[in-house]
Picture 1 (spheres, helix red, strand yellow):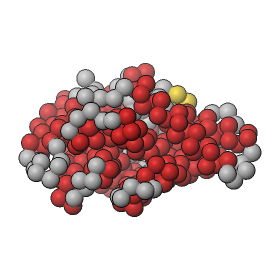
Picture 2 (cartoon, rainbow, N blue to C red; picture 1 turned 180 degrees about the horizontal axis):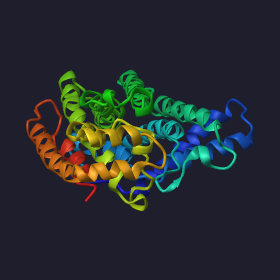
Picture 3 (cartoon, rainbow, N blue to C red; picture 1 turned 135 degrees about the horizontal axis):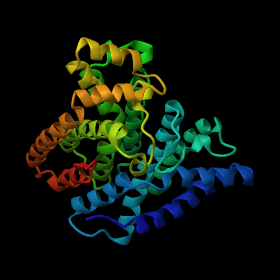
Picture 4 (cartoon, helix red, strand yellow; picture 1 turned 180 degrees about the vertical axis):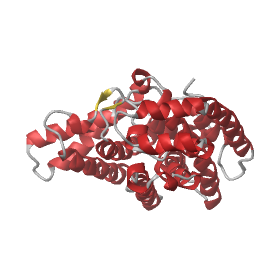
Length: 341
């Protein structure tokens, strides 16, 4: 069960017009409006649309069948609001990380005539989220709950990002513990990659009981950790042409699952190599050699099998009496399971 990319993008075109119409009420110059339109398309389109598709699919599951045309439009709009939130976050993330490509495209801040104005563009992308929520859900009985969800998830993700930007050269490898990694995975990844899509659908479908939301949190957090571990693995081992970006975690000195595992298994000699080379440009091969000697790729696939089974067990235990469906979480897990193979 999944909506087509074409149907989703058709909705997005109309939403861009809604956003631009809102801007135009402030008599914004046409040249600026054109640049912001380019920003909206460049930073929101081109991915797999996992979040927006998941909102539509989740609404369909919760409502028990194919969505009407109006239900689809509203669910897709909610999904695009999440995609815009992601766009806001990744534009800033690329600047902070010094990224070069995103989804196979040049990062926005590196585009001609953009530069550091991308910081302000990111803020506008976030504002666009709330323009859409007010226009399309302002009369919904749960409008305030929707707005609060987006604000809270944005803050949680920013807190995760704050922790993620504290790198090895600044604090030393002693700070890189499993607890720190889990915090980053939970706050930087789990809430905005998994929780928000399901929670938004629950709120829209009026089944967002505290129990359903708590169950969603309880499954989204380990799923977010699983996904972040996968991202860390792919950043190191995947072909950049397949990944859509050049992996830079080692050069940037990020607190990844791989470095945490390496620190727990390495010899004093290997530890010295990591301390000398981790987080330094052009020295990633020395770090990767330690990873290879420690067989971290093999360890990752062992983790992958175990963690996916554990998440599957959590899904099997979901109480469906309050309107939540096990298949909602199963659909999410199927989209990320062994994505690196």
